[in-house]
Image (tube, rainbow, N blue to C red; front, side, top):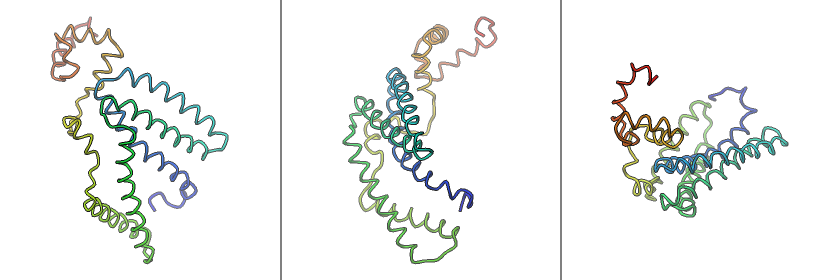
Length: 219
C-alpha cells in the first residue's frame, strides 16, 4: 500500500530484515549503555571484530544470492546482540538469561496481539488503505490493553539501574569521552586551555575555548 505494487517482489526481503530489526534493538541498547559508562576502548576493539565477522558472513551468504546475504545479516545481528549483552553485563548486572526472560514477555504479547488483529480483520473485506489504518489502531489498542493486564514494563530494569541516563537531553558526553581515548594529544590540548579534564562530563566548560577561535596557533 505504501510503496505500491512495484515493491511486491521485495516483500520477502523486508520480512527477513524485520527479523534482524528485532535483535538490532537489543544490541543497540546494550551498546549505548556500555558507551555511557566510558568503556570506549572495549567498544572500539569489539567493533573491529564485529566488522570482520559481519563481512565474513556476508561473503558466505553471497553464495545464495540476496536472501543469503540478508540471512547473513540476521545471523550477524544476533551474534552482535549476544556479545553486546556480555560486554554490558559487568556494568549493568543485566545478564543474557535475564534479558531473554524479559524479552519473551514482550515478544509473547506482540505475537498474541498480531494473531488477534489478523483474526479480527480476516472477517472483513476492506480497501487496503482503510484496512491498514484500522489494523494499526486495533493493534495498538490490543497491545496496550494486554500490556496493562500483564503489567508489562519495558526497560524498567535499565531505569532502576541508571535513572539518570533516562532523559531527553543529548549532551555529547560519549563523543567527548571518545575524544579522550581516541586523540589523547587533542584532549590534553583542550584540558590545558580549559583548566581541568572535567570538560569530558561538563559541556559548559568548553565555552572557555571560544577565546582560542581567533588565535592562529589554535587553528
